[in-house]
Image: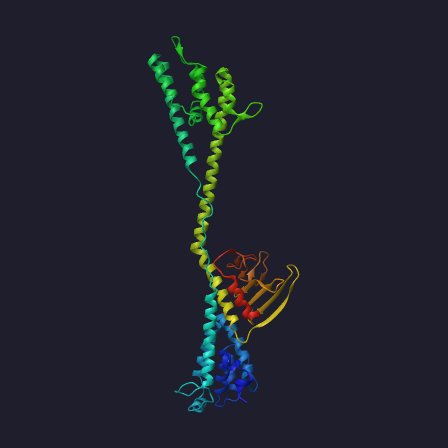
Length: 447
C-alpha cells in the first residue's frame, strides 16, 4: 500500500515532505526513519532522539511541533522556516541515498530530471497553501485610521476684542488725566472743551478699563468748574455710567426687584436722577462685574487653548509614533490568523461557555502558546475574535504576569494592546477593517 493512501498530509504539508526526505536519506523509503538520520535532525532542532527508528507520520507530527516553536523564536513564518528545513533536508541526503535516488522515483524525484507526479503534487499543494494564506491575509488587511483633532481651535476674536478694550481703556484714561491736569493748570473754556472731547473717547467697550486706570474719574469729572461752567454728575452719568449700563446689558446683567435687564431698568428709571454717590456705587459694581466677566472669558480661552494644543500634540504623536506600532500589531495578528486558517493539520480546538457574559467560546491553541479565540451569540454567529500572536507575558499593575491577546475584533470596534504593561487595551479603532471577512476567515478554523 502506498504511504500517500495512509495519510495524504505527508504530501500536502511541508512537515510531511521533510519526513519523507528523512525517510529516503538512508537509501530506503520504507516509512521508517533510521535512528542516526532522525537523531541528527531532532538534535539540530531541539527535538527528542529515538531508540531504533521513527515512522514518518509520527515524525511529521513532531516536525510540525518543532517548526511552530522555532518559527516563533526566529521571527519567521511557519511556512518559510519549514521550507528552509525541507531544502536543507534535501541537500543533506547521504551518499547512499543519493545513489538510490538516481534514476529512481522512490525518493520522490530524480537527481537532475523532473519531479515525480507525487512530489510535484505535494509541492503544488504546499505552494497553493502559501498563496491562499497570503491571499487571506491581504483580504483582511487592516488600515489603522489616522487620528484627527476633534476639538475646534478656540475662537480668539473675543479675546482680541477684550485685549483691545484693555489697551484703549488705559490710553483713554491717560488722556483724561492729562486733560484734567491741563484744565487744572490753566482753566479756560478751550481746555474745558478739549476735556469734553476727550470724554467722548469713552465707549461702552473701553469704559470699564478707563475706570480701572482712572479710579477717581467720577470725582475728578464732577470737580471740573470754571466761571459758571464745568462738569457735574450729569457728565458722570452721560460719559461713564450710561456706557457701563449698556455694556452690562450685553453681559446679561439684571437688576431691580423683578430682575429685569439692566438697560431696560434704567430706561424706566433715569440714572441721571441718582446722586453722585449712588452713581459711583453703581459704577464700581459694574466695572468689577465686567472685568470679572472678561477675566473669566480669557481664562476659559487659555484653558481651551491648552487643551487644544495638548490634543494636537497627542494626535500628532499617535500618527507619527504610535500608529505604526498599532498597524504592526494588527498586521501580525491577521497574518497569524491567515496562517492558522490554512494550517494542515488544524491545531487542537477546545470549547466551553462563559457564564459571566453568557456566550459560547472556542479556542485554537498552538503548542507554543499562541492562540485564537472566538465568541458566539445565541444564533451561533461569531461576535468576537481574540488573537494572541505574541506570547510575551503581560505585566499587571499588581506585578503579576499573564498572556493576553494583542487584538480583539468585534462588529463595531477593534481593540489593540501594544505595550504589554497592563491588563487593559491601549486603544480601539472604529473603521479600517472588515469584520465579516475576518469572521469568514475564523470560520475556516472553527467551522
